[in-house]
Length: 68
Image (cartoon, rainbow, N blue to C red):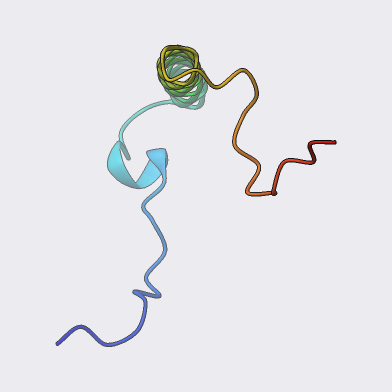
């Protein structure tokens, strides 16, 4: 049985690559941030296309639509 959430902090880039210089660490962090931004944009585009194919013109907000 799993008890509670893991309270151990996630490793940093420095933890993963302790031999990199400050300049190299900055470059790796920048590359990772750009990669994650790209992944997020791809996910949002696919989600948007799926909503459009399903006939949803607006994102699902969880609210009941107000039709007169």
